Image: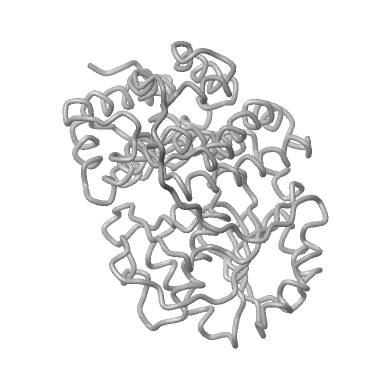
Length: 387
């Protein structure tokens, strides 16, 4: 590929990593000019003792605990009302990708009277943002460094918001907070980061600068994820996974995602399947079709230590080694219907991902990919393949 491309890269937040990252919080809050701190956290933060660590650093935080699962418009709006009641708040998002997406949207929504529905699919621009700091407790979504959030409306459609206002001011990466994640959560979130990295590196919007972070994320995940799954107390592997998720987040923020996310979002809308396992199974199902666009996947295959032709099999073997089957079996029961998956893939909210894929699909391809995704899902659940 010898073509010359034009591209632009988004800015990134200030970042602090390592076991002492939380010590930066008081100075960051002081510098923000905020008078109060609104903590938006998931239940895991409350249950694993990390909330006590936060309160030791910031004694006067006001806490809103989100329910868990995929973010909804109703929950974003409830959290926004909580934050609006505080005086000049800084929003501190702590948790997995869902909690961070809620916190990011709250920070923007509270600057105007409308609810988050007003901003879905970029229907209207955000009018500002409160100071915002994120502390990811999983290593997967990269939400701490992206300008995009996922949120479901009252009809259950998996939608998104986007804006410069959704990018945090600072990110703290503390590997200790991820050490209590159970193996199947470590696997599901880490594989989400792998899908981000592979899709960003191969997308039609990819460029050499952003691709470099994606490819290094692939290398880090190959090295660290099996270790983190086997031994959650391995802080070196945990820190590598935090860095990989962040790098992959930077990559998708600049390059976008592709077919696996198009399929995965359809699965989320239709069956409310967890995002990480949905996009991972979708990537595995689509990979033999994807790699026919050979040049786009050559560097990914090299980062994976194999040829392009061997990439589908190498990916499947890696997924076997990182407990994907267990993560899939823990997902809700769902009777996947390829025709409705394919139709949902072509809805307006999913078209940006579909059109950004390196290999472009026809409606016939969409149906075939949906069928292959359903077959891989059933196989990884240990269910006989239908049809």
